[in-house]
Length: 216
Figure 1 (cartoon, rainbow, N blue to C red):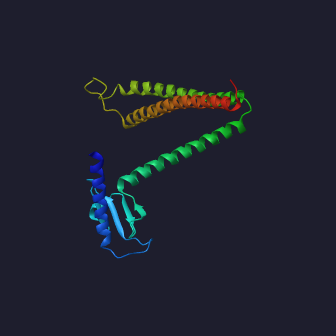
Figure 2: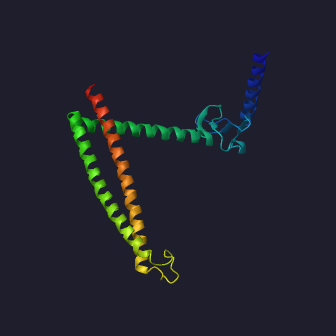
Figure 3: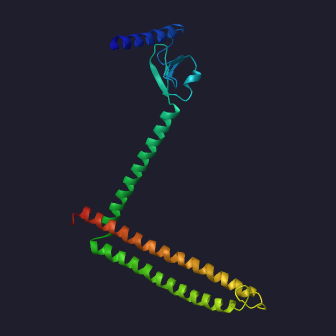
């Protein structure tokens, strides 16, 4: 019974299409004559111009003999295609970057020790920068402590009722010192992240170099 019902639906659709096509005069094999699609409810639609229900749906353009000449992408199909193409492009780019990285490793280094030597140089440079930053922070903290001892004699830090307000130059120096400390502290944290990134990058390079060279 199910096979008979399916055959009946197919036959009805064919008859509907044949009846529609019979209303149009004969055209060449390459001449666009009809539009066909399924609307959002799955209902087949035909028309000699784009049916309103085909807007945003995959729509076939046929000739007078019912041959599909081209397909107009619907919104969902186009979105899927663009997403797929973007993913494929990203994959191609990543593959190209890996190939370039491999070529750089082979052409730049002769052994693992070369990579480790460069890694250690980069780390030492960052450590030197860190030491300078830490010394600057210590100096600024000493300055902050000195300023705080000075402003303690002024309002609103002093409890004395006749204490004068903080002079503008002291207030400005305190603000600049606090802001400077924050900037250098952020620089210190950035330096720490860069050290971790350098170690991770060189670790990956050493591993890949060994793979390319067959070193265990």
